[in-house]
Amino acid sequence: MMRIKRIRIGPAARVVGFLFALIGLIFGEVAAFLATRLQIDLPHLSDEIMGLPLHSALGLASLLVIPLIYGLLGLLLGALLAMMYNLTAAWFGGIEIEYE
Image (cartoon, rainbow, N blue to C red):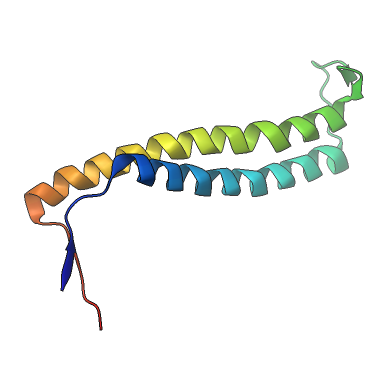
């Protein structure tokens, strides 16, 4: 029986951040598709953003911004969870894993 007593914060944060960025890329693809296909009328925005049609600009922005935000939030969440695990593992002894 092996026991996980401590998780290194940096590597855990990087892994969770990367996984969240991948999830954000998937959601960004969906948002880009919806932005270009549904073409919802947004009266408070102009018809063009930086020379691109509004829906194309929103779709392109979602491909860049959503994965970035998800990745940064995942990085913070991974670090926080690793710190919380280390604290509770010190109190309760950690997770036990049994190998065959």
